[in-house]
Image (cartoon, rainbow, N blue to C red; front, side, top):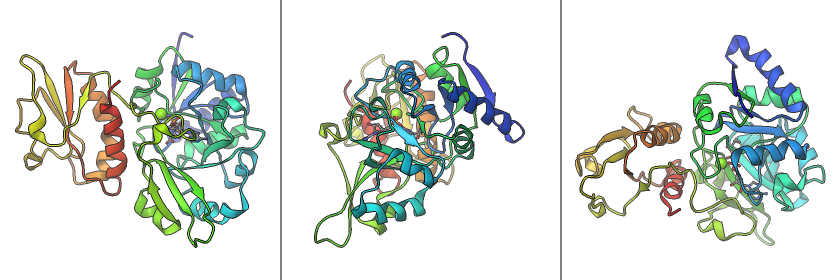
Length: 343
Ligand code: TXA
Ligand code: MG
């Protein structure tokens, strides 16, 4: 592959960008497209050859299944089978959060190639909240398989320029829809109906923009911790979302022991000295996740961008301040822990 083209999907260019992207997908090409969470690398979900190109461009191992994106709730029946005992819960959740950043694991339909699901009997499904993405799906008339548009294990891209840094020269086309509104990948859940219990069990396989608090209206919610050991969640590796520069996290600030002559950067939540990090060291560079008043929401939107900025500084290590583990903070801490996990 040689040249990667970026096309704008601004208001006046949106129609033509949607047409061009859908035509490329229909021909079996792969295209990077914006979603509300992060940019995805899209392929026609029913075309196994196209899906194989996605794995190749990302250098993603075949054991890590893709999410299938539907353009409308009606399309769900094409990719998944709705078990009777959880159908009501799926419909309620879809009503509350779709289109949006919630991915539901369901038994797959025969139409979905095994490559998409890495041979699992289940498929991960969501309806993206991004209008450009959904319009491409509608124009294509088929569901879209799309993982995040980064090299495997790296930081997910939240802008077209970040996609270029990850995949330039490896894919033919990027649709530029601006910065992603959420900034973190979708929440992934499974749903189980428990005999004798009134409420279903909702297991969170990946924390994301839809929080535990929000899901609790629909069932008993458990956030899975050691998921990398679960055979039904093969892609949730301990080390992920990682910058090339080592990222360090500590139980308490005093545990940081800088080495002589090394250059360290700080990824701070709000730049507040009271957190114990800002004045701990002569940082080469300090970046705040939430410089404004947006707090966790702002931090989520900016997390991957700021990680990328610090990664480009050529530092010896990045120290990350923890954020409080409530609401969106759960998903932010999940990404930080995985980024700091030994590789
Ligand atoms: O927000 C998002 O979810 C973005 C946008 C592009 O939609 N996509 C995304 O895809 O983050 P990806 O491939 O980077 O992460 C999908 C995760 C993987 O860790 C994979 O293991 C898991 O979903 N997954 C996919 N199918 C699964 C299945 N059948 N059972 C369990 N986990 C599954
Ligand atoms: Mg990913």
